[in-house]
Image (cartoon, rainbow, N blue to C red; front, side, top):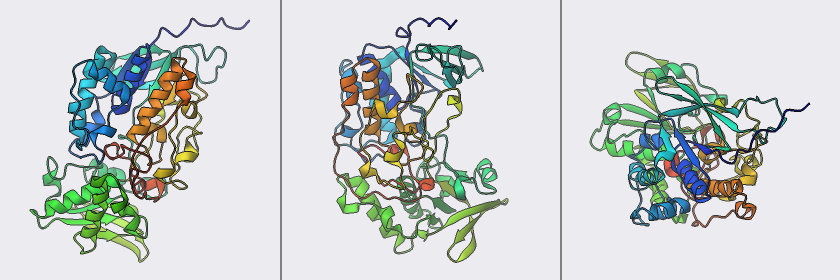
Length: 447
């Protein structure tokens, strides 16, 4: 005899993993649809990843950085919106938008709670009977090690990819010695605070920046500024492509003036040799000593060693799928995005400008009620945009509420932008600080 169907799940919360811009926007949309959101954030504060690059200024003005449902919720609190034409830093994004939004959402957000697994209540991945009617189970762990299982009618994974950087080595693998170099602090995360908290780490040092996206460009420009007061600072830049011209982006073709100027400024530093550019360069190993880090590279001229004091890894990110092993996922085998989305965003075949807005149907998995959204939904592809994430969660919230027409009406109204690079996917820049507009709004690949 088949097992009886479980009770309805509609009274359960919609659990959202991650309290960044997309996770909080998802909560606002779910709440607006008269459903119950519960946001779980592993950090002690909301937007934990953004705090790591809070010193970095976005290219997009405020008018493109605020979700519509979030704005409507904030308007009920007396919130005063920032100047729509101003360019915020990551920290200003937190202070002036995300923190007030979190306060408006109140106890619907829990911080210091890490999601370690998602499954179905009482059944594993192999069980099909009544699967769609069975609540999702979310196992969480708090800082003291306590584990608790929570039931949900739906789960949106907006945990991002910031803590899962791509390796610096070839073939998608860490180069020999890479883990040791990280452990010794010789390799940094993307977007270090070169002119602030991390100044002493780079001033009058030999620095290698690896990657050809906006993360690398911002760090290179900061290092060049640092060198004006610390003149012994040596700046090296390694990219896998043969020609840096595409790295400079659209320049005068970009409606976002700050981003268009970035490529121009970088080119003017490379041409006179202020920044030493290494093209067609692949890292094959690291050797650490007490005083330096030797980086072995494969170049058209053969194997070469570069002695540096620090390496900035601006080579992009990939999703950590460990906590989703008991779910039935359908992922593109190349970019690890939802299968229907993968071909639309694969940087080997598409630039940012050719990625269309998409919603619940494209993001759906064989696991009913489960979605990967935001930066993590793009897997290893480098073209994710904050505004695209807002549209993703708007569509999903509509679908969860039974409004199929609104869920299927996906659209974005964004500015014309310049050229997107299409370098190797393993070196694509997906830093969230810089990915805030239309599919043509960033220099996609290099990290």
